[in-house]
Image 1 (cartoon, rainbow, N blue to C red):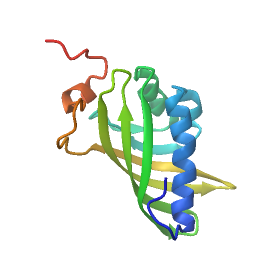
Image 2: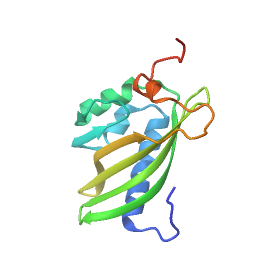
Image 3: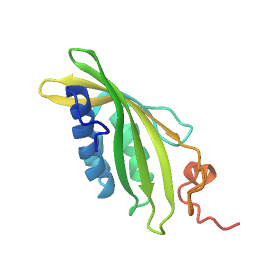
Image 4: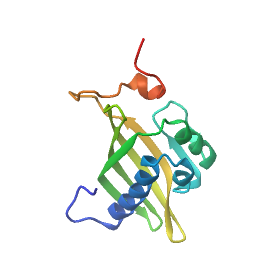
Length: 149
């Protein structure tokens, strides 16, 4: 979803890329997700590990439990150069048990031929606020935790 009535080319690039990302994420298809990234992509998901390239990104998404879904909203988008777009998006992850995790993304996309690919991806958890059933940062760092002590 684009957060503007007057959507620009950069906003459309971000929205189209995140729509494909969402589809692969919701279906838990890491092999499809990595095709959305450049071969040399810089990636920081919600774990403290910095990753580079498609094989490391595959490992990150493959380790997530199936059943998590995502929705997104484009916040801002800018064209940095003819073949570079950057922007911010808000993502809401929803777990099978109804818990939610609000996240903000910072992205840089690079055009390779006809395709726009994610060259840089950084995710950060938004403050929990007053959401019920929100996932905690500790659970993000260990997505396999069941929340029991």
